[in-house]
Image (cartoon, rainbow, N blue to C red; front, side):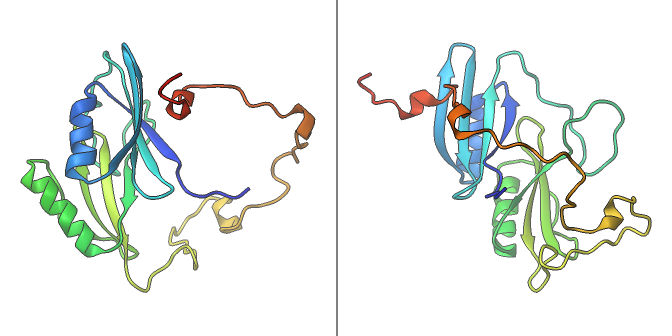
Length: 192
Protein backbone atom coordinates (compact mmCIF):
# COMPACT_ATOMS: atom_id res chain seq x y z
CA UNK A 1 0.00 0.00 0.00
CA UNK A 2 1.21 3.50 -0.80
CA UNK A 3 -0.36 6.26 1.29
CA UNK A 4 -0.18 9.83 0.03
CA UNK A 5 -1.61 11.72 3.01
CA UNK A 6 -5.06 12.45 4.39
CA UNK A 7 -7.34 12.86 1.38
CA UNK A 8 -9.89 14.54 3.62
CA UNK A 9 -11.14 14.65 7.18
CA UNK A 10 -14.93 14.93 7.17
CA UNK A 11 -16.49 16.98 9.97
CA UNK A 12 -20.04 18.24 10.52
CA UNK A 13 -21.52 21.71 10.83
CA UNK A 14 -24.94 23.29 11.14
CA UNK A 15 -23.74 26.52 9.52
CA UNK A 16 -21.69 26.07 6.36
CA UNK A 17 -21.35 29.81 5.75
CA UNK A 18 -19.72 30.43 9.15
CA UNK A 19 -17.54 27.37 8.64
CA UNK A 20 -16.39 28.60 5.22
CA UNK A 21 -15.72 32.05 6.60
CA UNK A 22 -13.45 30.52 9.27
CA UNK A 23 -11.53 27.93 7.22
CA UNK A 24 -11.39 29.78 3.87
CA UNK A 25 -11.42 33.46 4.72
CA UNK A 26 -9.66 33.48 8.10
CA UNK A 27 -7.26 30.55 7.70
CA UNK A 28 -6.75 30.86 3.93
CA UNK A 29 -7.78 27.39 2.73
CA UNK A 30 -9.27 27.25 -0.77
CA UNK A 31 -12.86 25.99 -1.17
CA UNK A 32 -12.28 23.44 -3.94
CA UNK A 33 -15.56 21.50 -4.20
CA UNK A 34 -19.14 21.66 -3.05
CA UNK A 35 -21.99 19.18 -3.26
CA UNK A 36 -25.51 19.96 -2.18
CA UNK A 37 -29.25 19.49 -2.23
CA UNK A 38 -31.95 20.60 0.22
CA UNK A 39 -30.97 19.59 3.77
CA UNK A 40 -27.46 18.46 2.77
CA UNK A 41 -24.17 20.00 1.76
CA UNK A 42 -20.67 18.52 1.56
CA UNK A 43 -17.87 21.02 0.92
CA UNK A 44 -14.11 20.46 0.62
CA UNK A 45 -11.32 22.88 1.55
CA UNK A 46 -7.71 22.41 0.45
CA UNK A 47 -5.03 22.18 3.14
CA UNK A 48 -2.21 21.08 0.80
CA UNK A 49 -1.94 19.64 -2.70
CA UNK A 50 -2.83 16.21 -1.26
CA UNK A 51 -4.84 16.97 1.91
CA UNK A 52 -8.29 18.45 2.46
CA UNK A 53 -10.76 19.06 5.24
CA UNK A 54 -14.44 18.60 4.44
CA UNK A 55 -17.68 19.51 6.15
CA UNK A 56 -21.16 18.07 5.94
CA UNK A 57 -23.86 20.62 6.69
CA UNK A 58 -26.82 19.01 8.40
CA UNK A 59 -29.58 21.27 9.75
CA UNK A 60 -30.03 19.37 13.03
CA UNK A 61 -26.37 18.91 14.02
CA UNK A 62 -25.20 20.90 17.03
CA UNK A 63 -21.67 22.07 17.83
CA UNK A 64 -19.86 19.60 20.04
CA UNK A 65 -19.25 20.64 23.65
CA UNK A 66 -15.86 22.32 23.98
CA UNK A 67 -13.17 19.87 25.09
CA UNK A 68 -9.59 20.88 25.79
CA UNK A 69 -6.98 19.32 23.53
CA UNK A 70 -5.47 16.15 24.97
CA UNK A 71 -7.49 16.15 28.20
CA UNK A 72 -8.92 12.66 28.94
CA UNK A 73 -12.71 12.24 28.89
CA UNK A 74 -15.17 9.46 29.67
CA UNK A 75 -17.87 8.23 27.33
CA UNK A 76 -18.17 8.22 23.55
CA UNK A 77 -15.52 10.17 21.64
CA UNK A 78 -14.52 10.01 17.97
CA UNK A 79 -11.24 11.91 18.15
CA UNK A 80 -9.49 14.43 20.34
CA UNK A 81 -8.31 17.10 17.90
CA UNK A 82 -6.94 17.58 14.41
CA UNK A 83 -3.46 19.01 13.89
CA UNK A 84 -2.69 20.77 10.62
CA UNK A 85 0.94 21.08 9.63
CA UNK A 86 2.47 24.40 8.61
CA UNK A 87 5.93 25.23 7.23
CA UNK A 88 7.49 27.10 10.13
CA UNK A 89 6.98 29.20 13.26
CA UNK A 90 6.24 32.32 11.18
CA UNK A 91 3.12 30.55 9.89
CA UNK A 92 2.15 29.72 13.48
CA UNK A 93 2.48 33.37 14.48
CA UNK A 94 0.40 34.44 11.44
CA UNK A 95 -2.35 31.94 12.34
CA UNK A 96 -2.24 32.97 16.00
CA UNK A 97 -2.47 36.67 15.09
CA UNK A 98 -5.37 36.03 12.66
CA UNK A 99 -7.37 33.96 15.16
CA UNK A 100 -6.79 36.46 17.97
CA UNK A 101 -7.75 39.43 15.74
CA UNK A 102 -10.98 37.63 14.78
CA UNK A 103 -11.90 37.08 18.44
CA UNK A 104 -11.17 33.34 18.65
CA UNK A 105 -9.38 31.89 21.66
CA UNK A 106 -5.90 30.76 20.67
CA UNK A 107 -3.07 29.43 22.80
CA UNK A 108 0.45 30.72 23.06
CA UNK A 109 3.09 28.91 20.98
CA UNK A 110 3.91 25.62 22.69
CA UNK A 111 7.25 23.82 22.24
CA UNK A 112 6.72 20.03 22.31
CA UNK A 113 10.38 19.29 21.55
CA UNK A 114 9.70 17.86 18.09
CA UNK A 115 6.95 20.30 16.97
CA UNK A 116 5.82 23.81 17.86
CA UNK A 117 2.06 24.27 18.11
CA UNK A 118 -0.82 26.66 18.67
CA UNK A 119 -4.28 25.45 19.67
CA UNK A 120 -7.76 26.81 19.04
CA UNK A 121 -11.34 25.82 18.19
CA UNK A 122 -13.30 26.34 14.99
CA UNK A 123 -16.88 27.74 15.10
CA UNK A 124 -18.20 24.17 15.56
CA UNK A 125 -16.02 23.75 18.69
CA UNK A 126 -13.78 21.32 16.82
CA UNK A 127 -10.45 21.31 18.63
CA UNK A 128 -7.70 22.26 16.18
CA UNK A 129 -3.94 22.51 16.43
CA UNK A 130 -1.47 23.99 13.98
CA UNK A 131 2.04 22.52 14.14
CA UNK A 132 5.42 23.04 12.51
CA UNK A 133 8.51 20.88 12.84
CA UNK A 134 11.35 21.87 15.13
CA UNK A 135 14.37 22.31 12.84
CA UNK A 136 16.74 19.35 13.03
CA UNK A 137 14.23 17.03 14.74
CA UNK A 138 12.60 14.32 12.61
CA UNK A 139 10.78 11.60 14.56
CA UNK A 140 9.63 10.01 11.29
CA UNK A 141 13.21 9.28 10.23
CA UNK A 142 14.23 8.33 13.76
CA UNK A 143 11.19 6.99 15.70
CA UNK A 144 11.38 7.50 19.46
CA UNK A 145 9.53 5.65 22.22
CA UNK A 146 9.73 7.78 25.37
CA UNK A 147 6.93 5.87 27.13
CA UNK A 148 8.61 4.23 30.15
CA UNK A 149 5.97 1.47 30.19
CA UNK A 150 4.90 0.88 26.56
CA UNK A 151 2.45 -1.88 25.73
CA UNK A 152 3.83 -5.16 24.41
CA UNK A 153 2.62 -4.31 20.91
CA UNK A 154 4.34 -0.88 20.99
CA UNK A 155 7.60 -2.56 22.10
CA UNK A 156 7.60 -4.47 18.80
CA UNK A 157 8.87 -1.30 17.10
CA UNK A 158 7.90 1.26 14.49
CA UNK A 159 7.67 -0.90 11.38
CA UNK A 160 4.51 -2.83 10.36
CA UNK A 161 4.65 -6.45 11.49
CA UNK A 162 3.91 -9.13 8.87
CA UNK A 163 1.93 -12.20 9.81
CA UNK A 164 -0.39 -10.49 12.29
CA UNK A 165 -3.40 -10.35 9.96
CA UNK A 166 -4.57 -12.86 7.33
CA UNK A 167 -2.92 -12.49 3.93
CA UNK A 168 -5.58 -11.08 1.58
CA UNK A 169 -6.48 -12.71 -1.69
CA UNK A 170 -6.35 -9.97 -4.35
CA UNK A 171 -9.65 -9.34 -6.12
CA UNK A 172 -9.21 -10.52 -9.72
CA UNK A 173 -9.21 -7.69 -12.27
CA UNK A 174 -12.27 -9.19 -14.00
CA UNK A 175 -14.24 -8.87 -10.74
CA UNK A 176 -13.20 -5.32 -9.81
CA UNK A 177 -16.19 -2.98 -9.96
CA UNK A 178 -16.51 0.72 -9.16
CA UNK A 179 -19.96 2.00 -8.25
CA UNK A 180 -21.25 5.56 -8.67
CA UNK A 181 -21.51 7.70 -5.54
CA UNK A 182 -21.95 11.26 -4.32
CA UNK A 183 -19.68 13.75 -6.05
CA UNK A 184 -19.83 12.53 -9.63
CA UNK A 185 -21.80 15.68 -10.44
CA UNK A 186 -18.60 17.68 -9.86
CA UNK A 187 -17.19 16.15 -13.06
CA UNK A 188 -20.30 16.50 -15.27
CA UNK A 189 -20.46 19.11 -17.98
CA UNK A 190 -22.75 22.00 -17.02
CA UNK A 191 -24.96 21.25 -20.07
CA UNK A 192 -25.91 17.77 -18.91
